[in-house]
Amino acid sequence: MKALCAVDGSKFSMRAVEALGALFHQSVREVILVHVIDTSLLELGLKKEGTATGKTKKILTALEAEGKKVLKAAEAYATQVFNEKKGKAIVKIRSVLVKGHAAYSLVKEAEKRNPHLMVLGSRGFHDIQGYFMGSVSRKVLAHAPCPVCIVKDPIQTPVPVVLAVDGSNASMRAANYLKSWISPDLVSVHVLSVVPEASRGLGASARAKPYTKALTDAFQKQAQEATAKVRSLLLKKKFDVTSEVVPGNPRAAILDCLVNREAGLAVLGAKGLTGPERFQMGSVSEWVAAYSGCSILVVRPQIR
Image (tube, rainbow, N blue to C red; front, side, top):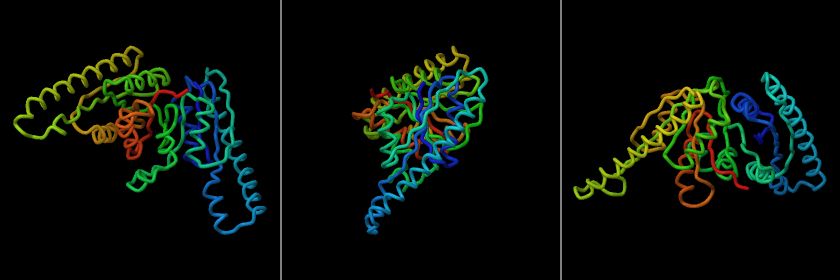
């Protein structure tokens, strides 16, 4: 696996490096550390203040020098993290310095380098204002061409994982990535499937009741089958697995489960980057990413 990890010198980005080593060390063969000098706001501010071009260049040169220091420290730390994994093949670690808007530069770099996974730390801005304005991690999650892992807290193994499934190809992809990327001895997995409210949009009239019951039964059956399929898949690979099917709103039910299970990682599938299906599923994963207290791995198809 090739992983792209964003670093900015903060403890949050170091957590991302640690999580990459702790969770994915069995799969990682190459790590690309990316530091972005966010010049968009800087240049706008300097222009408004009427700062001379020569002084602007000096400031940018200083930021570039500091960025190289950040990358050097991150590269040394990443080498230490992966070298601690005994019996692991040597991981190739590279570093890249780019300039531009932070989120968009990271997405562009991912499009250029085609990683299997992007990992970045989050400062945990899960409030209403942060949701609508969007943090760097949330913008990357919305536009990245590959799976994204957002790390909110230090990863302590074994990690309690909640894997949300809905019977779609997207959720099966998430289950398969989890199975392939993470060693069974590092996690315990709770498979969750949520049966949505069938009455939504049909009303509560007597005429609608037969249709509501039929839809509820169909949703229940789909959820049970999806849960059983994923549970069997993971058990074959010796994962510690529990499961449940619950009724309710997927967003709220997933968040409640993360709290009740004291999860360290949520894993969800997303259907892609275009079309109404992606928008609907994406809204769930992005909502969970914004408001959950734990780290999240969102798996979507890689765009080549």
